[in-house]
Length: 331
Image (cartoon, rainbow, N blue to C red; front, side, top):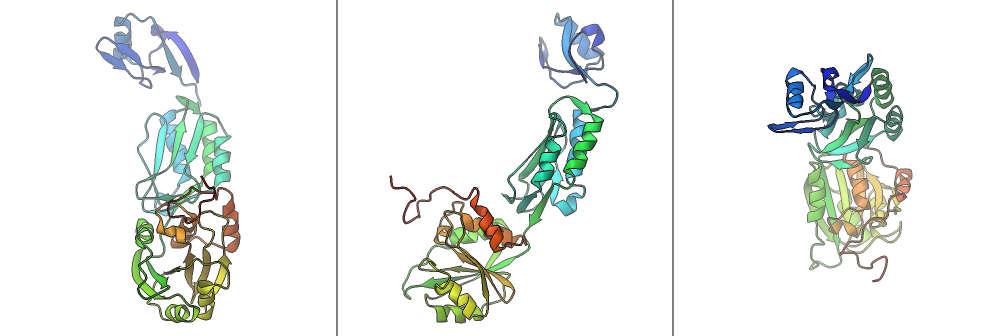
C-alpha cells in the first residue's frame, strides 16, 4: 500500500486518509475518492490530499478484518459467537448466549505477530459473558494490508475463540445453621450468580451444622446438576464439617483451599457424579471472588481439577469486600 499526499489530479480511486472539512459538510476518512469528492475538494481550494492507494496483492481493511474474524470462528454455531457487521477495518465478535470465553492465547499471540497492522484483542480467558457481550475485536489498523499477511494471520488464529455455554441447569444449595433460629446467611448473591448463566436454584435446604446431619441431608437431595454447600461456620480444614459430610455421604473431595483471596476456603468434590462446591463465606457478597472462577467453569462443563485451582494463584489477589470479617491490611 502506498500512503501519502498526492495532487488531486492523481487521487481518483484512492482512499481518503484523513477527514477533510468542507463548506457544505465533511469528507470522512476512509471514503473512496470519486469525481464528486474530488470536485468538492477542489472547490474548497485544495490542490492535494493525503490518501492510501492499494497495490496489487493488497486487501482492503474491511475484507481483511472479515477474513480474519471468520477464521477465528469457522463455524459460528459451534463456537457460540456471532460476527457484527464489518466497518472501518473492524469486526466485533459477540457471545450468542451466556457462557465463558475460551481463548487459546498462543493462537492469539501468533496472529498478532504476523503483521502489526492486523490485530486481535480478546477478553481474558474464561471471562463470563452475557448474551450479546463482546468477546473480541479484529481491527486492521492500516487501510489495506498484503493479502499474504491476511492468509497467515487467519491460519495462525484459526479456532482461537469459542464460547462455552452453561451445561448444568439446576443447582441445590444446602445451608447449615448453628441454631434453628439462625438467620439466613444471604443467598441472593448466590442465586444471582447462578441466574447469570441460566441456572435455576431448584432447592434451598437448611440443616444443623454438624457432620452427621449434613451427610444425611446430602444423601437425600432432590435431583440437580450441581450441589452447593454454604456453612454457618467457615470451613477451616479438610476434615471440617462440610468436606467430612461429603465423604460420609459417599462422595469425595478433590481439593480443599484455593490460592485466590477472597475465596481461600472453597472446596471442590463430587457426590454420585454430581459436582459439589463448598462455598467460602465471601459468596455472600456480589463482588468477584475465587468461588466465581470455579462455579462458572463447573456450570459450563469445563473440567476443574485440583491442579487447575492451584494455577489460579496468578492474578488471584482480588479486591477487598466489605463483608470480609478481617481485612488483609488494617487501615
